[in-house]
View 1 (tube, one colour):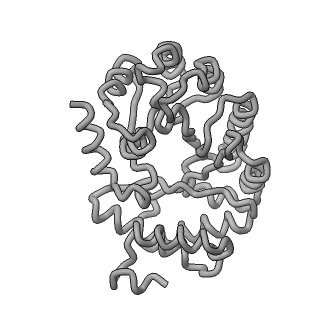
View 2 (cartoon, rainbow, N blue to C red):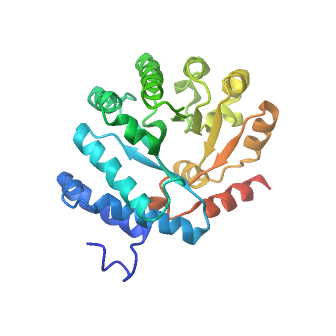
Length: 283
């Protein structure tokens, strides 16, 4: 299928553009070719080499079918292994919140079945942790689901004999502060340790000064970190963001951060370009 995409090895952006079109047209298309994700993984590894990037994490969606999720993980691992990148390219399993701000129970249950499956310990060597993404809403249900994932992570660590580090998309939007009260974030952050916050603009932007002041000690005490995605943040808000404030916040709280590319196939960026954008807003 990908032999005609430019002649030689498949291009990463082209691969996932084709996947998005095919997946949108036919939900079953994702499973018709056993080499589909293996080919995509190889394309990613080659793109990393071209960009001079040592390694990365691939976000893998949890499917409702255990068999389909395992098949996807194994395909990706096969492609990564073929490029000799097993130690450099790892997988992160993501649970996606719906429009109501909650992870569908069927998806959560599918993730639990995966961790409880007999083959999970053998798959875990390629998995760095879990992720919560999708629509963010301040609800009691969101807090309960976070606690559920904390318990599942402990089970995954016990079964695999390794530590997991989770990420959560949180504090992404800078509009309507009253919809995201500081107490909601404090309750969430108190539940986790050594997690990475993806985006997290509300924790250091002056528009959310009350939240930023109140979460400082919690972020430091719980050893939390930030994954900053400059292009995605500016696309969402349709304006430039001064990331100097983040640097100041992290220095004051002794918090680490990483500059990342969020969905590079959509934004057509890589980590080097994201770093340039970040520092252009720091100056």
